[in-house]
Length: 455
Image (cartoon, rainbow, N blue to C red; front, side, top):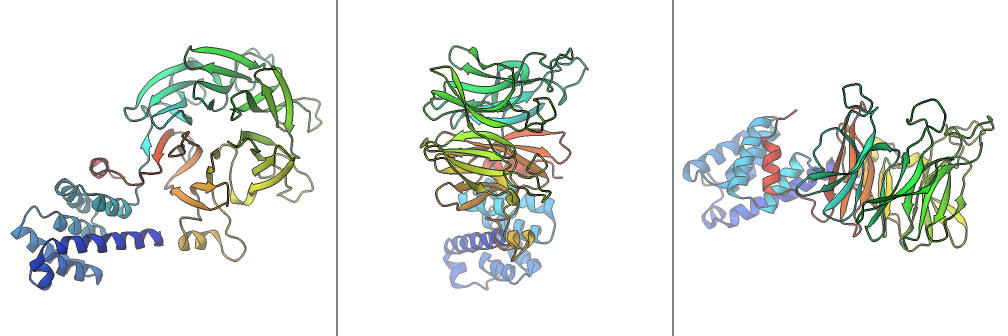
């Protein structure tokens, strides 16, 4: 928050300077009644009423002065007259839709440029970016269980979305899609886990049954089963060369209860798409999920449980997990994001030298999380970060308010970030996308936000 306020102050100083240099008379005589420069002086001192008086005088002489409306908006905001502030700022943007105005207004209201994906109806999960303009998402939009309502109990389907137009089309009909789809390096295929058969013999096909791994050719719309549902499988992704698929699977009775089921530990397996063979790659003391091979094909990134975090003498599903890097050439495991940084299974995604990750970084024993976020909000506090896989440097790009962030993904060139927001109650799920190279909203987008109902 402190850093954001400093940013607003810098932007305001620049805009005040721009407004003053546009009027040589005001620059040479700053104390003339009805000048933006005089209003600036009062604003900096915190005397918003005097600043407003100056700005109203400016409008008497020029009722379309964008700087007067702009600063009136800021004065009103500082005095908690938010509806009035929005009205002034909308008028300022109409008269001067400049980048400088947009930046300052966006910082003032603490807005970021994430845009909603698709229709927004139903439940939206786990986006997958095929390019900067096209995405896939898991959605629940149909009443598949016949209870006359669309809920989280219904089946998911995979939809294709044109991001700019938000045009949505069903790619795969409502099935028991169990986990996010991932695209092949050439963007022509996707791979995903799906539940199709009653493997536990209870008479229904639901989330309690095993999932198989499937691929889908986006060009000829052909689906192929890669791994059957003899065991429970999940979290499939392509290798960088597109010739194999990595996935998580439960195949050992790790808890020794006589059954192989989801209460046992996952391990990571590799399926060769040419030879049609499957081999185990990695298992940890606890779970081992969400495998991704880095673009250089040297490392496997996984979410895993490999520490006794609750100090009960055992490593199991009750412990917290983190993100690990496994050297494929010279088998070696190292923690990339520790469990105390609070990262969950579906909260990270690598692309090139970047890692998109939802977490709450631990600042260490010398200070608590609140102090760290207050002093350095771009590096601490719960949020969605972009982290360098080379040196570990990170920057927060999405600041949550009242929602929970999850399931980030990056476009092939790493410039677009997509992710999921859900409310705290877990009853609403929506996907968004964010252009990392364009961190500011346009005047049109800002105006639409400022005109929308305020909660």
